[in-house]
Length: 179
Image (cartoon, rainbow, N blue to C red):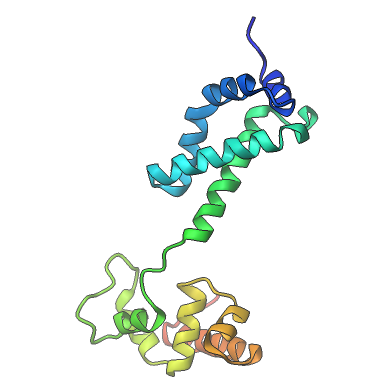
């Protein structure tokens, strides 16, 4: 007789290592596949999968079958673990000043694959340096105004103003409309 998913989770909650091993065997391909889809690197996906199973083991006692199937619960854990890894290890290939240099219209290497790269380069080059840095940090690096203020050692209001004014000028230069 096959053990149900709920039975395996209950066994894990009770500390049964055999139930945990069976649970891993049952779900390892799906967990690894989801992790790989999110992180894109097999070695990192293996680490994410291991972390997902550790979290499942740790929180097995909190599983409630009324809230969803075991597979959904485990894949949600996997998704969250993968997103955590992506957030922490998000590579930033260039420092903002280097990126601004690449965006310079006189730069030797164009930003291949970017829509309207030449227009964006020219528009960013036309901004005051402080606004261009703030816009690059906010748009390309995803930093908040508070993070930009801390990084640039400026008041929060100044960071917000630089972002806002830079984006307004870019919008005007690129002739972006609400249509």
